[in-house]
Image (cartoon, rainbow, N blue to C red; front, side, top):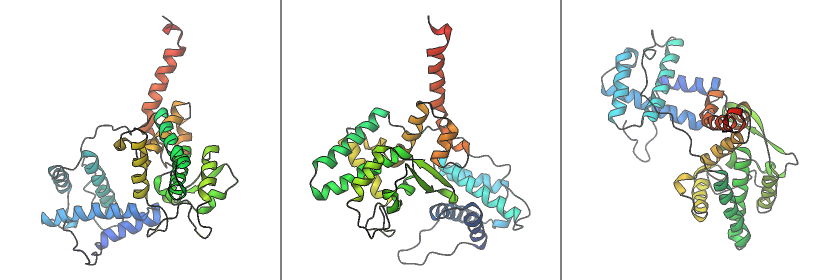
Length: 312
C-alpha cells in the first residue's frame, strides 16, 4: 500500500469499505481506533488485489489464500496476519450478506497457525515494588515534580485496583476523583457499561492528585494534547521510567501488563472467571479465558494441598 505524502488529503475509502465501517460503528459500537485499524487492514487487502489484477467482486478462495501467503512473505507475525485475515473475512461476510457479492470466498480459508501466547504478568511482589517506588517519588520530590509523581501514583493505584483499559483510565472525568462511592461507573468498548470497585488506596491517591487538577478541567488527568487529557503514549513512557527506578525491566512493564496483573492476581486469590470478565469489560468469556493458565495452576495447587493421597 503506497504511503500518502505529507500534507496530501487522505483518500476516501471505497464504497464497500465505507459501508462496512459504517456498519461496524452503528451496529457494533466500534470506536475510532478500531475503525482506523480495520480500514488499514482493508486498504492493504484491496491494494493486494489491485497489484494482482483481481477486481474485488472476482476475489475467490484462491485469492484469499494467496493474500495470506503474501502476508507471510512480508514477514508479518502469525498473530498479525491472522488478525488481518479475520478483518477480511468479516468484510467478505458483510458483502455477501448485504448483496454486494454473490458468494463469500472466505469460508474455506484457514488462517496462519498461532501458538497460544500468554500475557506478560508481573508478580504481586513486583507490582508492590512499582507502587512503592511511585509513592516514594511522590513523597520525596519538590512541588513541581511532586504533582507529576502524585499523578503517577493515582494512575497506578487506579489501574491495579480496577483493571481499566488504558484508554478508559486516561480519559476519566474529573468527577471520578470526587465520587463518594466505592466504585466507578465505566462506559467501555461498544458502549457497554460496568461498575468497577475502588480500593481505599486508589481513593486516597485520587484525592491527593485532585488537589493539583484545575477546577475547570473536565478531565481527571488533564494534559496538553489534542484530546485535552493524558495520552496513552505519555502514560506508558512515564510508567517505564518508574519501572527502571523500581529495578524492573522496562520491556516487561506497560499499562496493559498491569491490567493483566490485576486479572491474574484476582484469579490466583480465588476470584471467579466470570467476575473477572465483568470487571475487565470483556463482552465474551472466551476473551477472558486467556487467563485459564492461572486457574490451571490454582487447581493443581488445590489437588496438591487438599487431596488425601498427596500426603505422602
